[in-house]
Image (cartoon, rainbow, N blue to C red; front, side, top):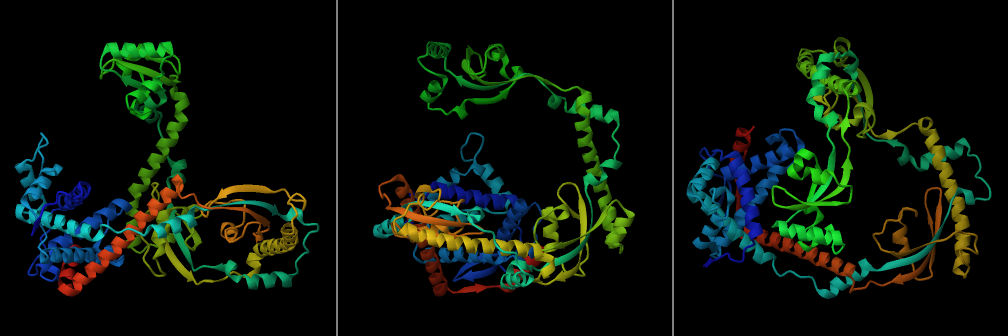
Length: 615
C-alpha cells in the first residue's frame, strides 16, 4: 500500500536531508565496488559498498573537526566506530526490508514536496531548480533515480520507526510515586564540631601508630602505574632572550595595530526604529512626558532589548545620528534621528572615552608580542631539522646538546601538572608510548615542540613509608580528631533525642529548609543528604567527616506538592525520558526480530577491501 507522509515531522526530514547532503556533497560517492556490490545484506536488502564508504568518510570528517587532527581508518577501527557504523547500516537495511514486506512506501506527491523543500535544489528565487538538482547530485556521484530511491526509503523508514515509538506512556500512578519521591524535601537543624571543640589535644603518635595507619590505608599511599620519561622540548618563552626586534619593525606593527592603541570616543547604544517620522516623534514625546520609558516602547513592539542593541559604536558608525547620540549623557534618549532603517530613537547605556597610546607607551607590549611571534616562527623553521636528526639516529640528549631544545625528565602517571605535563598534547603523546618506541616531534599547541621517550614503566606500588610520612601524619591526626569529636557528638546527640536544644548543649545551630535529594550541602560531610533522608521527624544523626563532625536533627518531612511547577517539570521530564527509553527498547527488539526473520550476512572480504582502499 502507498502511504502519504503528510504527518511526517518536517524537522525530521530537514535533519535527514542536512545529514545526507553534508555527507554526499562533501565527499562525493567513491566507487569502491570492484566485483562486490555490497558489504552485507539483510534479507534481500543490500548494504552498498559506496554507502558504507561514505558513512566511514563522514565519521572521519566529524572526528577530524572535533579533534583538529586527521582521522584514519585504522584509528576508526581501533575505537570500534567502524562496527558501530556497520551496525547502523544493518539496522537501516532491516527496517527497509520490513517496510518492503508490509508494503509501506511514499507516494510521488510527498517525494516531490520534499525535493522542493531542500535548499540545495533551489534556485535564486527559492523555488525548485532542476539544474541545481542535477548539479548537486552529480557532485555527489548519484543519479536522480538513486537519490530518489534513497529518499523514499528514508521517509518510509522514519514512518515505520515513528509507528513503533509512538504512544509509549508511563502509568500516571508510577509517575506520581516517582515525583513524590524526587520532589519531597526536608527541614533540619545542624551544628558542626571541629578541633576547637576538643577539650584537650590529641596525643603525639608513635612510629608504630603511623606505620599501622599507613598499613591500614595503604590504598591512599599507592602510586599508580607511572612512566619515567625523558623529553626534549623548546617553547617560544625559551627563545625570547635570543630574538631581536628592530625599531622599524616595532613602528610597522604600531601602524598595523593603530586602531587598537588609538580608539575614538565610543558609545554603547540601543536603537529603536519607527516606520515614520511622526511615529518616532510621538514616541519621543511620550518618553519626554514620562508617559512611557524606552523599555516600555521596546516591549510594546514585541521586542527584547537584545533586538535593539547596537553594541559599541563610533561617530562613523552612527552617520547622521552621531551628533544627537554623542551630545547626550548615559541613560538619556536621543532622537528622532536618521538611521539606515528609518527614523529612530537612540538610548546611550555607556560612554567610552577616546583612547590614545603613543608609540613609546605601546612599545613594550608590541615587543613582547613580536618576540613571541618571531620565536614561534624560529621554532617552526627548525622543526624539520629536529625531525631529520631523530630519523638520522640522534637521541634526545643529542638534540638538547646541539639545538635550542632543553632536556628534562618526569615521572608521569596521567595527571596534569606544571611544566610539560600541563600540555594536553604531552599526555596524548605518551599515553600509549612504551619503552623502545621511537621519539617523534610533537607540537605543544602554543608554538612549541617536544619529543619524548619512555625509559621505564613503574608498576602500581605503595610509596615508601618515609616518602609519605608527612601525609600519613596528617591523615592519622585527622582520623584521631574525628574519632574524638564523634564520641563527643554521640553524647550530645543523645541529649538532643531526650529533648535538649542545640543551644542548651552549647552549640551554635543552623537551619536549612526545603532541602531536596539533589541539593548540594557544602558545609556538611559527604553523603549527608542521603543520611538525612533516612531519618524520621525528630530523628538525630551524627555524621563524621574529615577532622570535623556534624550533628543533624530532622525537623520536618515536607511532602511533594504534586500541583507545583517543580513537580510538573519533574513529571514531564520523567514521562519524556521513560517514553524515549521504552521506544528505544521496542525499536531494538523489533529490529532484532526483523534480522532473525530476514537473516543477516556480512561480507568481511568486501569490508576489508573498503578499509584497504581508504588507508
